[in-house]
Length: 134
Image (cartoon, rainbow, N blue to C red; front, side):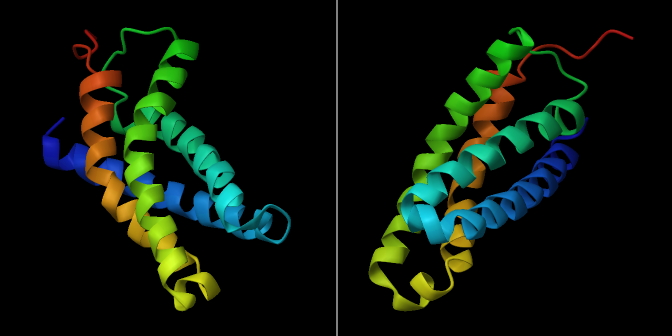
């Protein structure tokens, strides 16, 4: 698959992950708050994006891991991009009353900041096998 198509698919999956991330955050915000709620929402989004990227974005590639191990490695490497993502989000929440009122803005800024790290990690560390021979 051409790299630009793969980046496009990864971006579409990421957008769906953004929807999951935001929906879970807003659902948890009253009880869990903006910080713990975001940790949980990020993990939910990571699970959704792993499934979709596994089937769609990198479906033509093999992983050197079992399915369970692949999921764990995917989530672990997404944490790198997630740390960038969460750092930007937390900084904006702490420094902007507007973002505290509309945390979707912080989620968006954080998501954009971590997407490059996440794509490279997924492509090079998780779905790095040869194409399926079919």
